[in-house]
Image 1 (spheres, rainbow, N blue to C red):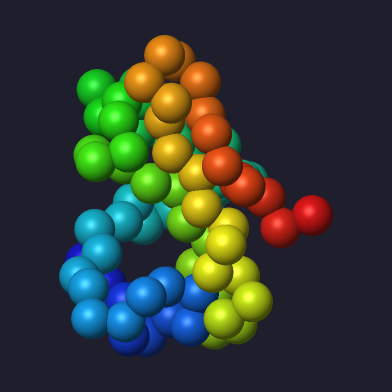
Image 2 (image 1 turned 90 degrees about the horizontal axis):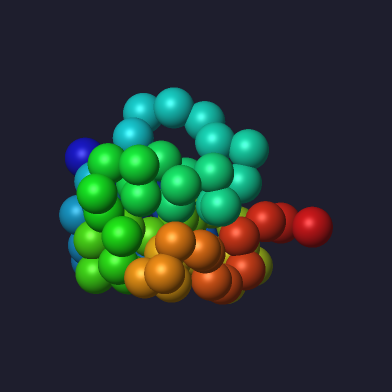
Length: 75
């Protein structure tokens, strides 16, 4: 578990449950969730964790139909 205050790319004041491994993109992170039955934005969000607030928009979620929606990569 992480405190969101430790990452400028996240909103402050939250506890974040995360998978302690690297993913090549937010899409890969969301697919990891979907493979484990977490198929909605309420149960999984792929986020880019960094100390740069400019990375805040890098968020993607399951679309509920087997796909991914949002801005999932830095490039």
